[in-house]
Image 1 (tube, protein in one colour):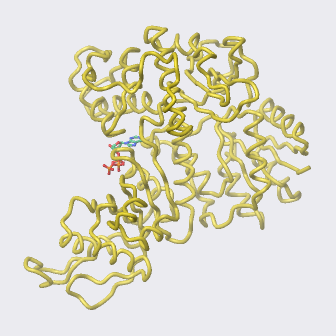
Image 2 (cartoon, helix red, strand yellow):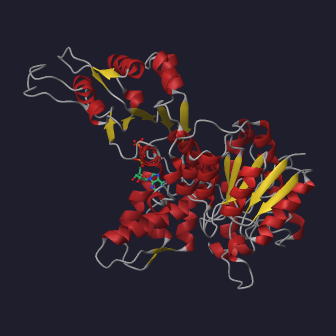
Image 3 (cartoon, rainbow, N blue to C red):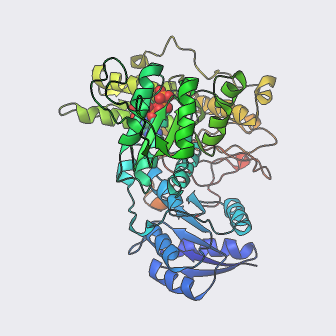
Length: 514
Ligand SMILES: Nc1ncnc2c1ncn2[C@@H]1O[C@H](COP(=O)(O)OP(=O)(O)OP(=O)(O)O)[C@@H](O)[C@H]1O
């Protein structure tokens, strides 16, 4: 039995969680405010802390920073929030949170996170001077991503930002998936935020020029070198240098990058003097670097040096819950740039068409399409025909009667992704594209749910009932009994999902959890 601390200003949430923890065989001590929590934590040793983020007075992140400052050894702190954003997830992880969960959380989620927390010692080495950190949600709204897959990216980014040593960070993902944005978020949330952020596209510059761009040159080093140039490494001193498309870098330059990583100094082309540099390197690529190593086009030693803190961005088609919130985000942004422009809305059919696309160009392709629509569509509502996607092969087959055998051969995540896409398309088709109705009434037939894995389909319905507490965010969740193996959430409104239903009982709220 472990002694656990619950910090939450909401009595009902606190009590529910306390019951769950007691049911798991632990002692649950409750604090209704950050101040009470600090007073308890300095007197009593807790095995783990469940900490609400939004509280009056000290918020969760302030409490976390204060706990770190006051306790010799910080217990695992699990931050809970009904308002998960890129900003507060990255910030919580940077401050040393053990995990960051979006409310509502299920009993199983509580049990899982607690089991992990109790197995692990308190996280060490989170960035110093964290006490002055602020919740920068507004700024990070740019990194839109209300899906489990993107939350994993935010957490990883926060952990990378927290690491005190300037270890390199590798960001992997298909073209246009947001690698550059992750690098910028990492800079913004790290102790180097006050330093420069310098980005260079290694694929766009010829090898000879790339060396000079990176390491600088002295006057007369080559024809046209009329004056000394410091180069990107020195320009990024004290900050972050993004080496974009590092998978396309010539072998000779790779060797020099490795040397900078090992020795922390650069020598300008044509020069003899070395210059110490203190730079956090972020390397990004859409290439499979392990494969490039096998093929001999990427240095193995550099790969192992880079592949330590790795952030993997899923392609847009792998995070369906992001598509509509991102599309609406880009429409709003494009409208803000138009004089007196109001953002256009997506018709249900347009939303359905967007979700069904494969998006080989990922978020960039979606952004371009939305900017085009905002500029060119005359009416206020963008319809499916306005998207001009007719010629593109849809990612979803209309008929999901059978699950093709090759789905599961492709691996479970891929199979779940395909199934999820079909179920959503079906639900939307049944409701003739009406998202609210699809969320309210349409959940996929139980027959389409695999026997051995649970699928959570969060086609959220809009909260219309004044009686429903705002923070509980009901949604549709499906799972076959006793099969909690796989969960996927699709939240077309971009907010956390919640209420459980059982397939056999229709859309009945069973248990709204805090
Ligand atoms: N999560 C996100 N929220 C908001 N905008 C995003 C997000 N991800 C990507 N974008 C936008 O999509 C576009 C492409 O993103 P970015 O340049 O970061 O992709 P990339 O993976 O670095 O691409 P490349 O491989 O071509 O370098 C940018 O305009 C960026 O603003």
